[in-house]
Image (cartoon, rainbow, N blue to C red):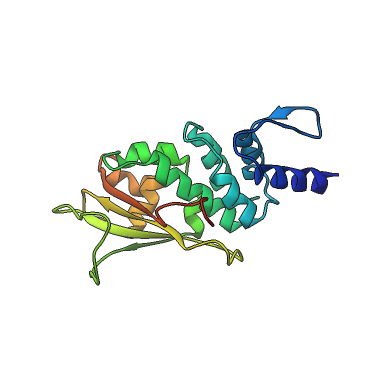
Length: 198
């Protein structure tokens, strides 16, 4: 029965934008509500997660994304897509590291991510490195979802630090306390968009 409901939700989420649908349990659901159900389902496929992301309104609270990104019951691709959304939607340039850590809710998803300090430039960066600051590249894991594009972000910080300290600071850990009052001067996710045309 659960697989039938999940399959119905995925098919419904992919059909007709903005329509209300009559769910099997009798509830009338909007396209956005159906998409949220898909996003909250640890068994959802990578392609259904990508389709659902394009249906979720920008007004949804960050807790939707932190709940998925920080929950180890979800596969790597699912958590990475949610973490990407958190960075894209809720962690703007100018935010303090301390505020970013609160927004990321412990950032348990960082455990599977690669965070590297950029020490040599081989081309243009989508963020500007401030004087006495540093830039980093964050790569999010895909797991076994080959249809998911490479996900990540470039981060620029107004204080020079190493990757381990920034990782700890974003996770709200005491090892990152020296960066709590530092600020993100640039945040650029890649790809630029997710959930539309994938």
